[in-house]
Image (cartoon, rainbow, N blue to C red; front, side):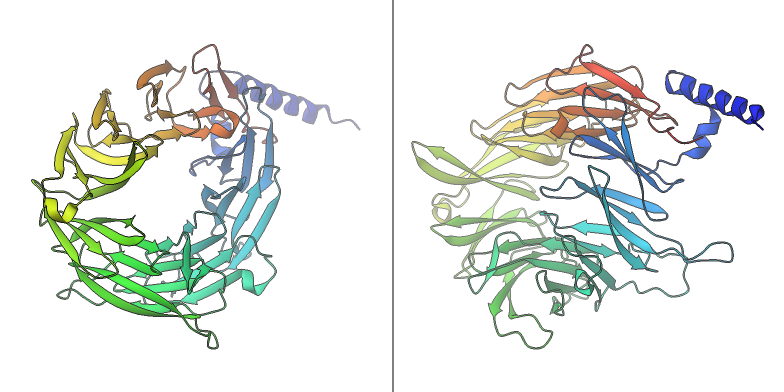
Length: 518
């Protein structure tokens, strides 16, 4: 017999869904209960990925300017807690799920790291009952390290354990996923670029722990990491805060602000022995004043030079790595950050450094030509920013840099002509995004209805008023779109055409979260 009552109820729900999806009003509480969207969305290719933690589902929204809200839905392992775009030339996202330990009312569900591509295909790396909560990926997107930053509700937990996954490997092979228990709790991972040992290219990862460094050969995960003890400084723990890999000298430079030294690790090739790495490590100590706060590597006649700044002593140091010779250069004020850059004048290349202090306004340039003879005479103040400096976010062609301020606004620093051009703002610009291919820098602070951009090449700016306040912003620059997420239980986004950022070329999509929800 035909069930008219059921048919009527379904029709009512469908009408409600349609009205909510096409309305600007607040959504029905029914839909709010169905969604949990705490994980920030990310982009890949021409899609934006949302995670509904209540349904354990990834929603891949078509984010092109011609989109009608089409979305691919992908089931992901139980309890997703984190997502990021896969680094490198990969149109995939990484989704970390913590699983479930099992209980009287629920079966045990494995923790997992899942790769999802733009077509909705997925690869799952199961992690068993291992509640990792931190994902650190290499710049090429080939490897990830999983660690723990907090304790789960377990009786005992191995906080020194890391998991390393080769993302290009087969999940069914033991060599693809490796677990290692270190001699300390890991807190950071540094990956090499253009490194070699004995003239042979090497992919190296350094895992930092208190007073220790663990060196992994990423192409031989079956081998145990090489342990390096950094020691203590007057009983103060040493935490590696910065690591530079020098392929020319086959050295690794380690800086910690709790030490007065730079650690220079020399890696030398040797025959692999059982499960040990095929390189040995020796360490040299380079004294650089009190508590070095930043360092940068540059080359002079193929010789490696380290430029180190120390805030406490108001000094900088240039270290010739080959000879150990150090040139000490006093500054007129405290400094804690450095950026090396080059200029080409009449076909001649010269090297310089921009030096400044976080939360200060003064910016200096130092010339490296005959730096040992100048002794401070080659330092000049190029200007002051109108607000204290927070961070240099990006480097553009032509030595143009973008400075974010600790207060409000931002500035463009042109290192070729040594000028600072300020842009004022009514509020702090915490959320910012760089479109490198178009030379534009976008800002869209949460809780207000404006999106603005700076055209770096023309040093010009403009903004756009939206219909609803910003909740999140996702750059989908591969599709020529800046996607703005608004508060909505049914899904509400605004697509901004980055080639034509005006109201005419802006459109909205509503209701993409409620498909198949009834």
